[in-house]
Image (cartoon, rainbow, N blue to C red):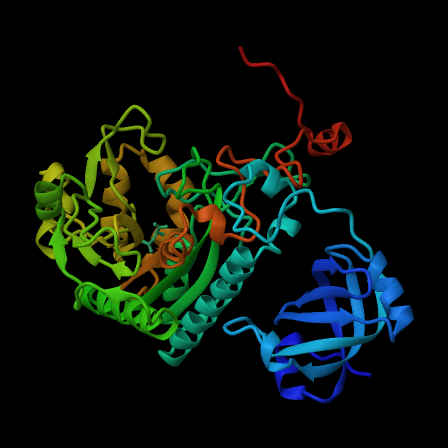
Length: 471
Ligand code: ASP
């Protein structure tokens, strides 16, 4: 007999079916046993009755989270037993036989609640269990729907989805890179990408014109509620576009996404208001203000754009990218506004050079940012010079970019969305860990896999690595 998904049972009243899934709840009433059965599609109440004595025997033995194959008849419930508003509340599965596919230890914690009362480290240590709770099932399935919709929308707009390497060289996004030692080339390291920034620009050089990717980005920075060592961006880049065109396309994507998948949400203002960095910081003392008129309304979405950021800022103590007095505020590959290109090339009035950067902010969180890029090699070279890189370092780190820009690269620009942050807001979750299938703790640990962990001495030997205590 073929397996039927639980969500289909409502249409099969009077039929014999085979379902496969987990025991969600078990109520033993002696003469009969109720098993609420759960699979990926839904839940149904099943009942083992004395007239099917073998099935009743097994039902008395099973426990929550055991995995069963249950054969039974789909019956309509008598009127008085119908549970309004409950999934499959009008039917019941009369169990004919039970096959135990796997037993289960008693779950280490309650998986039927929303889980907020459980210590997070405990949840993460058994994430496969934690993911069974309805809230997590909903978040992860909804995440899939968001990604699928965005993918389809971008495909319809003529974008190509193109993967880029994870083992690469450092690309500056204002953070530290994770390094991966090479065994073959001892003493050398790959870096995990902080973003696909350079590759996506190289794809524009290569002539693909419209690229996107759901990209994993790795940044070695201190974790916070809305940050993780690795996170997902919806990354995109387009050739022959203006700042306004990129902003318009992204605004349309965001609005369509909300309207299609989150119809209960209300966007406070469309088109999204656009503020300059100066206006927004002057008015709200923040470059990512929460503009919601009613902050108690969980369904209100206040988007805004922030533009005209300063290109450079003075190097702070915690800055790790520059050697000089200046560093970039957002992205070294950004193009300045046209009226500031002269100053960039001449390296003067540095503090007042504005970039074509645009950030999109939602309810007080930066959910995306991008810019039009420098497509002429000289302008990019000037950025690194202002940051205090000498020509040898520029050549070593960015020679390939300068070469690519000098080999027929079209004007281009793009953006990346922090997908996890966006989902966190749309799902009404307090932090991004609740929307990521396998997140790390706030301290960057994965208690389930036990990472990070010391490497095996033989592995270190193969890599030619020896530890020395640094005082
Ligand atoms: N690569 C940039 C970032 O990760 C986004 C962009 O400018 O497209 O912030």
